[in-house]
Image 1 (cartoon, rainbow, N blue to C red):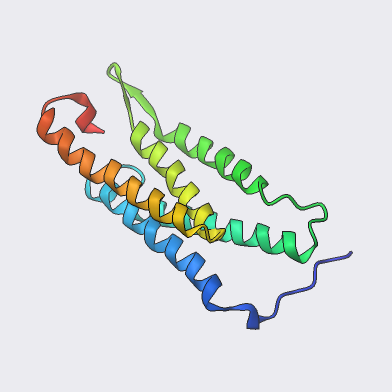
Image 2 (cartoon, rainbow, N blue to C red; image 1 turned 135 degrees about the vertical axis):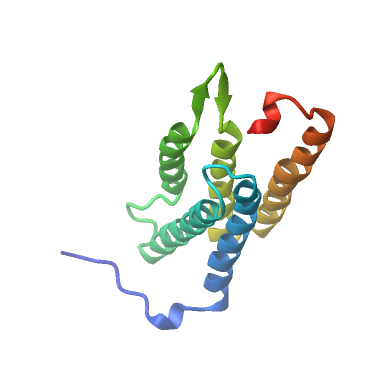
Length: 157
């Protein structure tokens, strides 16, 4: 069996650490709001999804360059993440008493995976804008909704 040549532990560097650590940190931060509100997918789930997406992307890119692009398509990371999160998201979304619950959480997990993929690819402008945008959309807009629409079903998600 022919395998790719192994990377030595000397390949551990600040760039690799930064890609994975930023993903883990942002995932935890994005999950904090969901955790504090008692939703199904919280701190650990968001942290793990973002970290795993980053590690998956780093691995795909490393193999692509290590094998000179032969039989390796790093864009398949998106397909794998989308398929996995489709399953997780479908399990989260619940239709009960005439309303749909957990859609925001499911979509937020998908966004967390995208941010993890961007971290793994070291697309720092995308990470910055997507991370800030996610925090604004999830936390700040939730505060606005709570004040503007205090008794609506949208605020129970």
